[in-house]
Length: 354
Image 1 (tube, rainbow, N blue to C red):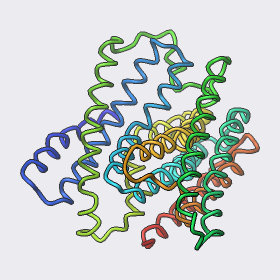
Image 2: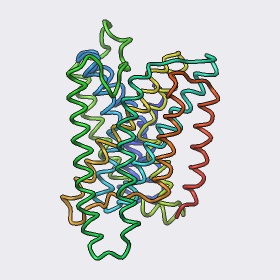
Image 3: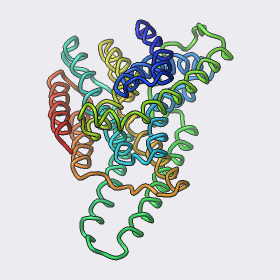
Image 4: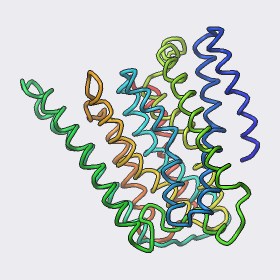
């Protein structure tokens, strides 16, 4: 993925476009392209740091830092009042990880190896958390649809949103503490970097931390630039806001994880591929999204944690279809193809969703 570093040129390009007031689509595109290599650099830096910290902390750091682009894009979207875009990007990350990333990993790995097996225990642990996250999507929507016209509906939804976000975050922290006290990490049972144990890091610890800090700074810069231009892009290019949130933003923020998951499956390390896709989805649902919801409560207008009905259908479909695929502890290429085809169907539908 080193060739993606060539896209770093779009950092000064995007800033120059913004300084000279170029067209919004140009600035938006440059910012999008700049985020891609920054996501890869975050992955590289955390991989180097994990060699010093050990597999348990390193695996958690890898999973958490992998979602930094989505977090910053979400923070700036909430700050700009683009709540619909923020919720769409969170749903899109889960859908993309569970159907596209997982599907492509199983498909590519299955082409090389007829059948691939993995540890069912870690997958089940993560899916139990995802099922709870699914409930947190269904219940607020069901409450809203069954209380239309109620005088207290808006107030009730605000309280429900705050409560659900707080509970999701509490569960995540509780599971995190539990996993750190055990011999295995429930988010990443087989750390990405297990193969690096005993090897010397290519970077010093201070250099890796410095690269990570600088990269996060530029991710924040480009995320703000992207969000400030998104409204103009929607108007000029006539792209649905939902499509940008569901498809474009998650793909940009997860390039490194997507490539890693597919490469691991092609090396017959399907456990790691599953843990990248599923573990990242857990963190989006139970860490990133609750943080963004709670952050909105510090602003003038709290975010109502109620997804669009079609988004809920897509997320629930992604969770239970991927659960069905991995529940027997083995995968083959056709299952991956079905996940990818389902993802494409949803992409087309979201393109026409207004």
